[in-house]
Amino acid sequence: MNPTQVAVRFAITLFWLVVIGLGFEVSKVFYNLHALGWQTWLIYGAFAAAAFYAGIALTIKLWNLK
Image (cartoon, rainbow, N blue to C red; front, top):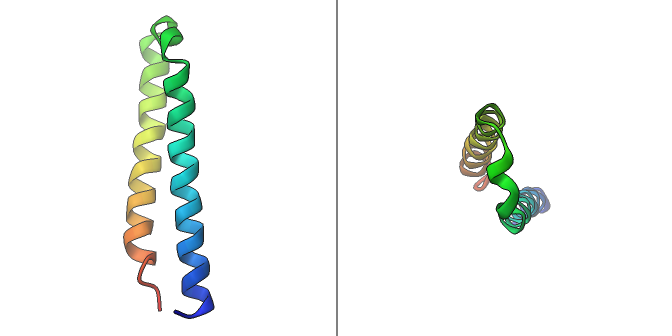
C-alpha cells in the first residue's frame, strides 16, 4: 500500500471511531432523551442520516483509492 492509501484508510477509520464514540455518548444519556420535543428528534435524525450516508458513500469511494 502506498502512503496515500494508508492515510485515507486511517482517516476513514478515525471518522467511524468518532461516529461510534458519539453514538456511545448519546446512549449513556438515553434516560433524559424523552424530554426532547419531536422537532429536536427530527433535526437529530436528519443530521445523523446525512452523516451516515456521507460516511458510507465516502468510505466506499475512497477505501480502494490508488
